[in-house]
Length: 261
Image (cartoon, rainbow, N blue to C red; front, side, top):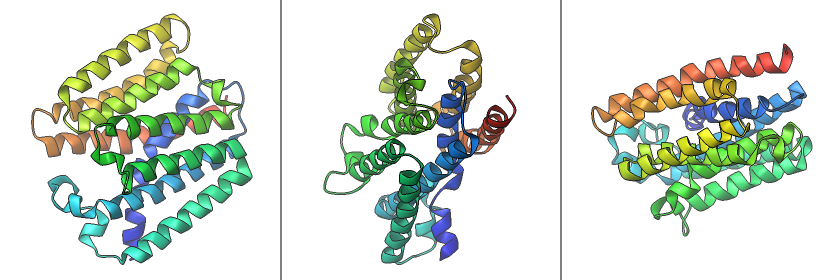
């Protein structure tokens, strides 16, 4: 049972946290390495709880989806009460740790929880509404970036246009995954225009683009192709590139920036 619960936390999806923390770190002139890494660990722990809750609430829908039939709670039955206890424990530990680390940081983590509850749980369950693209990956990406910025000195360590860029990137990824081609093209165009503006006005450098924008973009190429051919295989390739390859590279970059520069 414990193994099933741990699998449901999708720890490899911590790549999303590591990605945003690296981006924030490229804007910092100085950082407390252990405080920063503690924050990254707490955010990843919190999202582990939220992913586990998501798997529990979506179990009936996931059974009908060929790509999600290997989710832990489908392959191995676990008493829902034990899942909720596990989720509650992870949330308690992560939020308590966040409160000790920084109160604003803790507030941002609470916003992550609130957003995910509204997205996942009835009666609101934004996941089933037309505004789902606005409240899912897009909002969570911005909150991840904000949580990192706070640990580096404040929300505005990261320029506002970069927050908007990451919001559009998160929305585009969601739309791509949901096979909404028209909206994906629209959001992608807006992203490219804003990226050009951000570069010309000095909000983001070529080095930052090459490090934190281009590699994830390349990882989305198979995801985009999944809208046209061999969906299951293409999504799997995108998952390996982002959640396994890039996460390793990005974690090394974070350690280098924290301890060697």
